[in-house]
Image (cartoon, rainbow, N blue to C red; front, side, top):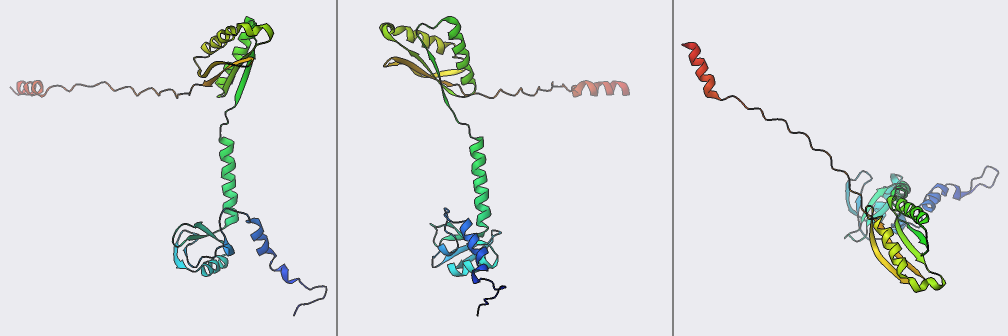
Length: 226
């Protein structure tokens, strides 16, 4: 019988913590708790202990008594393997690891340097310096020359400029794609050379010490006795 007065407690109030727990771990990659409907499962305890083969209902009962979740970790096994764990905490730690991995992951960008066939020496050197900076930071580099109007009659100039650019970056970069004319643009691609760690200097070898021969010592002792 339910109370209806001011102090009455709704019957769903006691189910709220459990419902909230289900909601926080919904839409996951594993089958958990009531989603596991196998006839038998092999159960692993929260501390890694092998608890044996039992029904899914019995495994869920044990997990619930320990206030943990029942998680199917090896659905392809026969029978499937389930483990007792705090699944919300597990998902939190996995998400944290993924974020750390993405944070430490190096994203290689493709930078671009654009020039004209009539570029002067100062502008060329400025573009070259910027390109070398991009390459030293580990980025790929696209270098292109744009032809306008009558410049299309002398596209070989663009090839000379690009090859000169690549030659002056040869210490830090490799040419992935040779200069190629596409429409009014001639372009090439450079990639930074892999950086090799400097070799550690070897430990100096200790000089060999020669031990005196045994015969002279013996002769000296004999002479002393005489």
